[in-house]
Image: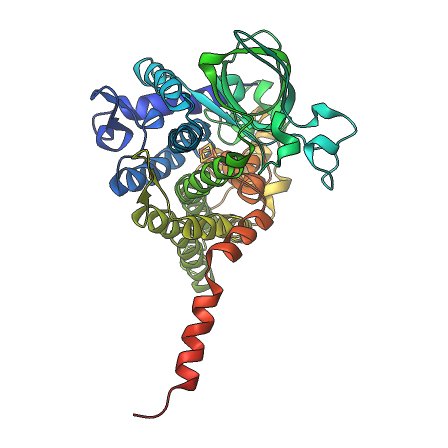
Length: 450
Ligand code: SF4
Ligand code: FE
C-alpha cells in the first residue's frame, strides 16, 4: 500500500542525483559549505526561494502526486529563523541546537516530516480548555535530561516515509497554554510513536493483480495520524519550550513557506492533468473542436496563474534576522488561496473533456478476460492508431487525479493542506494594509484639478 508513496519520496533523491536537475535540486549548505539536497537547505536568498518552487513543479510533473518532503523543508526553514529570534529575546540556546540537528539532516540527506496540525477536539476551545488535555500536543513531564510529550498530529504527509518527525505548535498560544508551545524533533522510530495510515479512495486497487486500474501505478502519497504517547525528547532536540509568544510566529512562517510550496507542486501535477486531458481529446477524436481547445487554454491559464504566485512570493522574499530568507507573506497566502480553487476547476475541465467513461469504464480484469476482453477492445476503441488499452489507461490517470487516490494530493490537500481557505483569508486581511489603500483613495478623491 505504501510503496507508491515511497517511490514519490525517492524521486526527491533521484532528482538531486540527476545531472540535468542538480542545479535546481541541490544547494550549498550555509553550515558546511557542501552541496546538499535542496529539501534540507535553508534558503539564503530569493534565488533559493524561486529554485524551491521550480524544483517542486519539476517533481510534481514527474510524480503527479505529493512527494511529501516539502513539509520537512518548510519546517526546517521556519525553525531556523524562529529559534534565532527566540534566543535573541530570551537568551536561550535553541538556534545552536537546531543547527546541530540541521547539520545531521543535511549530511545524511534525511527526510523530515513537519508535524503541525493537532487533532484539536472542540474547535471552539483553546488547548488548555479541552475536556481531554491531549487533543493538542503538550509537555506532560519535565526531566533533567529532556521532556515527555503527549498528543496527536493529524493529516501527516509522508510521516511513514520520514526519518525525523519535526513537531511544531498548531496555532498562536497564550500564557495559559504554555505547555502546548513546544517544538522538537524525534526519530520516526522513537518509542511511543504510533502511525495510523489514512485511507484513500480506490487505495486497495494497489493490491490487485495488474496495474492499470491504479491510474498512476508507480507514484502515490500518504498521510498518517501520528500519535505521540509519552514520547521522551532529549533537550538537544527541543527547539521551543514554553515560549508561547513565539508560537504564532512559527506557525505563520511555516504556513507561509508551505503555502508558497503549493505554487510549485500543484502546478506540476496540473501539467500532467492538462496533458492527460489533451491526450484524451486526441484519443476521442475531438482535439480540433474549438471548445476543447478553449478548455485546455483555460486550464493552462489557471495552472500558470497558480505557479506565478509561487514565483512572486519567492521573488519578493526577504532576509530574516538569522539570514534565512522568508517568502512575502501576503503573496504566499494569495498563492495558496488560488490553490484552494484552481485545481478543482482544472479537474472539472479535465472531466468535461474526458467524458463519462472516466467513471464507468470496465476493470483491467475485464479487459484481460477472454470473453469480455475482445468486446471491450472493440466497443471502447477511440481513433484509429491508438489501442483501447492506451485510451483506457489515460482515463485511469485522470480518474486517479480527480476522484481516485491522488485526489487527496491534488484536490482536498489543495483546499486544506498548509491550512484551510479561511486561514489564508485571515492572513490576507491582516497583511493587505487596508489603511494605506483607503488613504490612496482619499488623497485622489480630495485632490483638486491641476
Ligand atoms: Fe510538497 Fe506539495 Fe506534498 Fe506539500 S503537498 S509535501 S508542497 S508535494
Ligand atoms: Fe501539503
